[in-house]
Length: 499
Image (cartoon, rainbow, N blue to C red; front, side):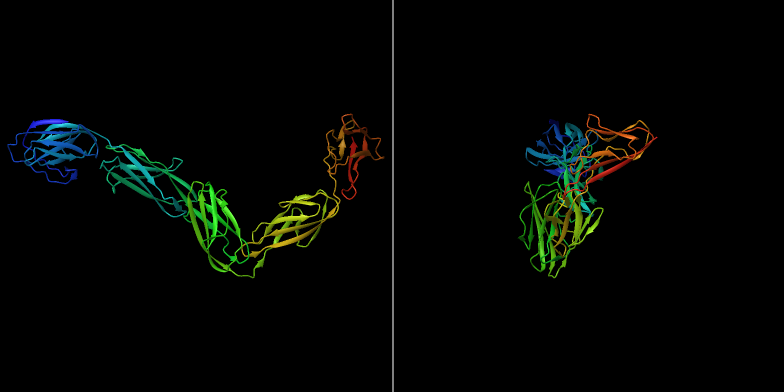
């Protein structure tokens, strides 16, 4: 932009906005003496610019005080730049455009040049703390920054949304505190433990462009710490306790170590769904500090501690309740008869809340809390043990299981006793029917009384059927032999009446 014009009397317009040297300052415009002989002067500068960014004017051969006025988008000057040359032949003045659009530069009331002013770009950020405490108000701050070196403070509104796109807050911007910067904030209270994501959108104004912030995440925990430590309220010397560390978010991968008075008491324990457990037996008495620290696979770390008082014994013994479904509770030292083929899962509990472990010697099998009997004679000695916890000492209960021959059972095709139409054929044993649970084959026969009314048939497909020959009643028996010392004899009966 270049302009040359014979000097005219400088207008005496008054403004409270002016740029002096490198920035804006409030001034009272001064007027040049009327008809002052200053000769010709020339002013050159940029033909385009950006809101809030300094523009340069080169002023030559203007030997008195003067002002350059700036009007925006066809309006009269609203911004003035003082220029002082004295005896110098060259001076430089700077100005920062206030508005986007067309800026007209006035000298002595006449337009000497125009400058096209663009909107300034912005960058929006939302800042949430790394961690927040459930139920406690947490400050979420949004900052909108004009592109440097613009001094323009963005105006308008910002909208904060969560990861699902739901609006959490709409706020007006406040200028400052930094150059070319505005901000807004609100107080958010996390309702529950977990990860929360925030993103802010600035909607722009007439002089700058809108922008969207990167997402920011905060993790809410019961304590406000990314790691929490839980343990029994009471600890007793010599009684095992379970220490549990939970790291948020629970999807994080890493490991936890536990400490006593700052010294390690455990190896590194991998996190599973954000949780690490460690069973520890206190070996001291008095006030101590229990700690837990974590390291993530990405190198993140954190720790927490709790003060605990450990008391001396004596301690109470734990108690085990072992219930056989359909039967009831077993007693410590009790003796129980179990038939061959018995298979069921106990229900187990303890006063301490610690788990129960079953073990046995003899021809029985235990897996977890399930007992399976695979013999019809002998004795199984079963034990139920718990390590104790929460101030209770561990205990072991003993049970004697006397093995007796089991009861054979079979799934039969034979229909139930009842009345059936003469001529009907009933299937007693289908071709693919299995033997009894002891592997014994079932033999069918008719009782003598009633043989004239029914007839056993043996088709070549391997089945056994019964034909109702006439009116009257017949009784059919199914039997399978027992196995000495293992299984009792199997027997079943059906009574059918022809009609």
